[in-house]
Structures are given as C-alpha cells and as structure tokens.
Amino acid sequence: MTSALWPLQQAVYAKLTGHQPLMALVSGVYDEVPEQVAHPYVSIGSITEDVDDAHNARGLEATLVLHVWSKYRGYREASEILTVLDAVLDRKPLDVDGFTDVSIAHRQHNAMRDPDPEIRHINVSYRVWLTRAEE
Image (cartoon, helix red, strand yellow):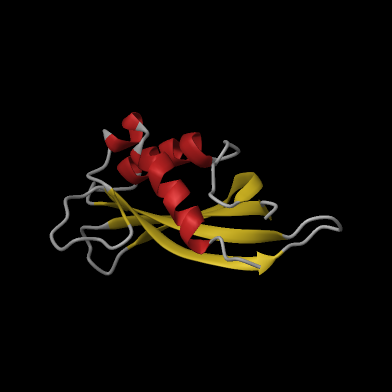
C-alpha cells in the first residue's frame, strides 16, 4: 500500500493556499514555519494513516491535524480562521494524487493557550478516507 502522507499534504496545502478568503485572514499556510512569521497563520501538523481496505479496494483512513496560531487577545480571530478552514475542507471534494473516492470531515478541535501568553492556538483534526487508484 502506497502512503498518502505526501500527496494528502500537497492537496490540503494547495486547497488552503488557493482559497482567497482564508489567505486574506492569515500570513500563510506552512509545513515548516519560518522564523519571525507574522501571526495569524496556519501550520500543517501530523498526519497518521491506518489501512482501511474494502472487499474490492485498497484504502486508507488518515487523520490530518492543522494548527491555527494567533496573537489576538482571546480566541475570536483563531475561531474565525477555524470556521474558514471548515468551509474549505469539511465535506468538500479533495483531489489527492494517486487516490480516488477521497472524503474529508472535521473530527474535533481544541482551543488552548500557548506557553507564550500572547499566543492563542487551536488545533483541528480532520478524518480523511481514501481509496487507492487502480494501477
């Protein structure tokens, strides 16, 4: 079974950075966050995969974690960005290279204070189901 880690990350990155309303709210979407990046921004966190074969197809169930980072006092800004992330990803088509029948759904999120008292952080996880394209 070929991993979806990199193709899934590429698909999510392209979808998020191609969405102008989201990009108007954040300084960027990052895999590796640069030093001194301006807040708010979104970073791509972990992706885990489990085999999820059907009787007639090879598949994966993945969990994708995104992080929203903000310096706004309180959670308003980060929550608004989370709402836009859901508008872009939750139950929306996603084109993942090498896979068909891709579906994605918001699984859970967690708002927290960072050890830096100026930073607010929301992590959000999405469950992604993928079927391997026929080779």
